[in-house]
Length: 137
Image (cartoon, rainbow, N blue to C red; front, side, top):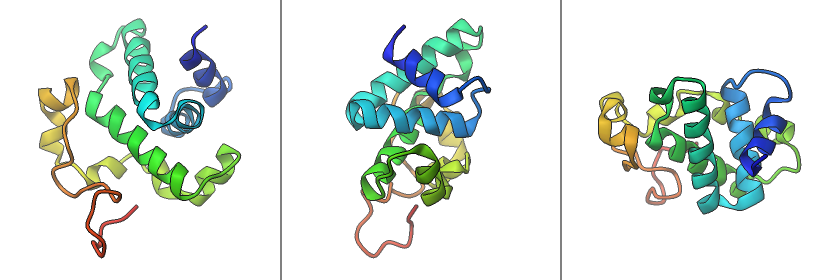
């Protein structure tokens, strides 16, 4: 088994891979490998899982990386020793529409975003925004 498989098993604990489990998986990956490595770990693992399930078109490169960056930002801002506390302290991460605060839907629907990284085009991520910007997570 790979590190991704171990983290996936812990995040799902016998349940399905819903949004909360994806956030849990990402939280585990960021804590285990750090943000830069977690991008590859999560992205490659989800892409492989989607191919194995026969739905490779469900993998989305920009969305996967954006979620890793968002979770990593919150891990740095509000560290927690267990996922239950992390989720309680960061409820905005449990809203699967969070990424839509940063991207236009047309951008995310495009082939460039599906297959590679595209910068946010609606609002900058909070750690990139100038101080005093009203957008935060």
